[in-house]
Image (cartoon, rainbow, N blue to C red; front, side):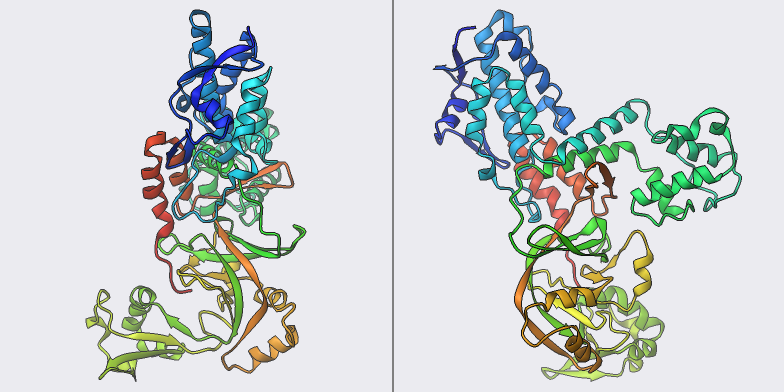
Length: 528
């Protein structure tokens, strides 16, 4: 083929840095092809057909090839210049999505911060247009993120399982399956389900065994550990739900995971706190990337979601009172007041009414709580500091519009649970003293010993941190462990479903889909 070829005008404009790009909801997009002659070291026809074949395999990267108007190979014979131009236009759009993410702007998803300047499109388009093997350019863009190859392998594995009919369901009725039990209906199904990943479990006569034997128990424990469940070998409600989660749901989450990692901005170059909401974990990460603190957390339940946000930890309060948000008062405390107002009062709660423009404390035992409307709740409730206080002994202040903070909790037993979405939106900490010690570092006159004395004083006090710490609450259901193992957590708030809808929307409607679907992330959160 001659080095003089035809390329899309928008592609040429992009190479030259021209503003001849269209703006859409997902960011700048290539315009409809218009052709002008340019000089380029064009690929030969066979290489162009390999490029077309690679574009048809974009599903390996979590993208839908149907979005890219890939021309049929037959066009190469009847109109070689038109075929090349259309193919490069399709490849240019795919390249942009692989570099910067297809769902580029999701309202409310401040946890996904992309930096197109980190991988500027124009040089890649130049290479695509001039490379002898343009398919290799697409492949390199698809694997820029170091976790992409691992995620792609897992995606291919799960798609193979789906093509073969999916996972064998394990009957959920009949209660918990205990180690050592016999169940001719459920044990073979359990063995077959886990045998997809561990073929040795279903080898030979063992496949039909109704006994929950030690080898199968150990396989269940490995599955539970991979799912973030307590690895006790007991197959109860949560383990059954994880076993029976459709493989298609996991495929969806892997597609999102691949796209979320594209074009990300570099992490802030300072010590920072990262809370992964669906993983129920907080990590303190040092400037060099080392994780110096890793703990379990409790996050908001589905009806009171912990929002994704970026803020800074600026202060610590000792023995904090809790000003109960109205939603918590209406939905949580009013039913308790109707049952036993004295028990609520003994829990340190004070009830206030407004009379003559002044706030007046009232005795909750004198109110007919059954006649109080939850829709027009007329009282203000505050909980005194103390052992029963919902915020525990320490509150970590990080200013934000959602009034979300990190805090201690008296409900320590909840950290033993595998799924920990119990709060009203704020983050409860498994190791508050360890985070306190780290946060106070560099604040003159403060250390763990002085903080312990402030807590023991039982009076409310606070300290401004000398060095505020960036805090990022993010929503990442798929993580790569040890560099080669993929862990997929349940999509507890449905944000992955919203994300994939934005990915699969036509370009012209991505603004609407992103705005509507990501509003799931904006469910009001308040309280503790």
